Image 1 (cartoon, rainbow, N blue to C red):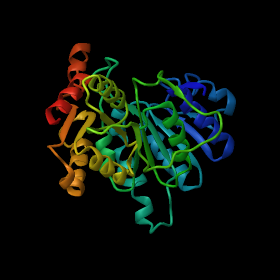
Image 2: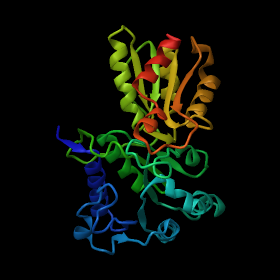
Image 3: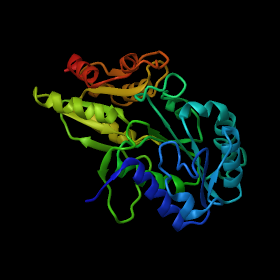
Length: 323
């Protein structure tokens, strides 16, 4: 099978959906001539023109306000916010408008909008450009939250997101845009709420998503050399979450380590622990372990930045503490 960069898989998903449905358009800062902050839209302005690749001023409120308005009139916008940190400037549009319009109109109106953004640390761009803020959106009823890690998953899930009739917060990670992975040439989509076991195992389940998935797989490789078999569980979508698959994995391995790059306090990792305690407590042979980022702003200094986020070694340590 051919291999595509993560960002090329994003681009291919957009092209296929824009060709399939004339209501789909792209809107955001620097997405025109520049092709987006991480060049996922390179060449699309020439292909579709400024009516469907809309370059905006530096105003997150305008980008998302315009996208919501367009969605309410029948279009299917893909709105890019350059860094997830900048969603703070448009939280009213995301949380009080996009997420609630369907509910407040008794299902008379839908907001079929994708908010594409990226988060995470690793590029040395400091505290206002490196956060992992998915828990904010995970907390809000009415929003779907998608965090794919591989080229295959990002293409299939982005196509599903564009076709979805509800607002989808689609979060990528800045460190994986150039990662390559197999992507079929034929069209496919991936349904929301269906997790993927990236590695089968029997001794412990490692729940990990986005860039932390790769750290978990590295840890699993090293642990296998010591005779410890890890099952690496990728939820792919956080809302909806494939709870049944997670519980079945925990029933199989009887142990769970939850890995998230976000700060530990109030994290998705904490909620995953609560869900498993509620639904599979009798199957656990030991305490659930969290491996999360520090409760700290992300430093600019590269060594301090790396000290703030989980790594292979911290995952291995957590696994060994419960084996």
